[in-house]
Image (cartoon, rainbow, N blue to C red; front, side, top):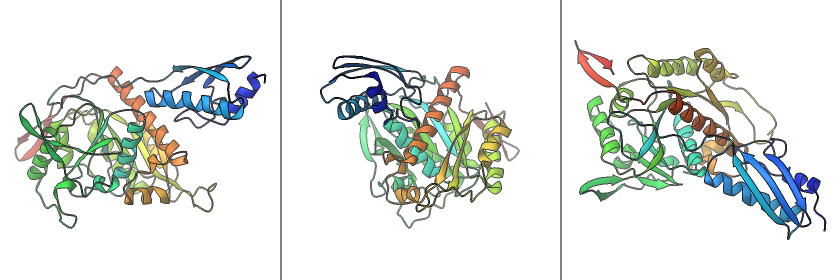
Length: 378
């Protein structure tokens, strides 16, 4: 059987590169195809830099050619990456955690916009891309990350590191997790003043053995308050992501969240804004979009504030269901949600790379008390 270039291209039109919506031919990922007898050489360029994405691309190309063109074809894939490599090490100043390269705070001005859901799905997508990831659930008064990772009944174990006893984070889906939820009963309310909450956070940050991480995601409480200052005092944050729905009430609070990080005395780079619950898609009408909370509000806010717009996530019932059963929706394969979270995560990675290339290292802020008020200094 003679193999033609047209046969190969037709087969490759049925698959897409990881994180890209169009098929490999339409997206331009396939740059050249050479055939000779039963030999096939495919030149491919993808944007996802991880080893997992490269191997997946190579395997899928071979598989589709063997299935649709010639079962015994000798296929060689020449793969090139045209995208950011693993984010450069952010040589952070201050009380950094050894082995953790990038610390990204996920915030929201308002509660109920899906910040923790976005954090969980961002984390598992980073892990799927091949990065080493951890989540610090800093939402002291409403910790939900253990439920979303199906580990609410787990407890961190003690390990001895360099002669010191450390907490070992609980791990699931390739993500390490620490949360105050591991140390309280499900029906127990956390009624703590600021100093007690700050002490608990510091223990989870510095008395834990996180190991080597490319990313630590910090799920902050809603609003702008004492916990936020405590985190930024304890750690040099690489950058912050702000989550909002499109509605005006949420956008007003998201604007305050961005302003908090951009204060001259805090100066944490804002990596961008994410629009959650951007539109509703009924299961029985998958081609219909209903803009229940408004249209492109967070996107417009990002443009007004001159910060990157990282992407939008639809309001889909399966996201809620996945969070409730402890298996983030981004783990579902070959779904529109998986692609949406892959695109969002890729944008976050690119912004982290850009931030580390263009901006100086971050420093933890210093907080002093003056005349009964908190003054924030560098």
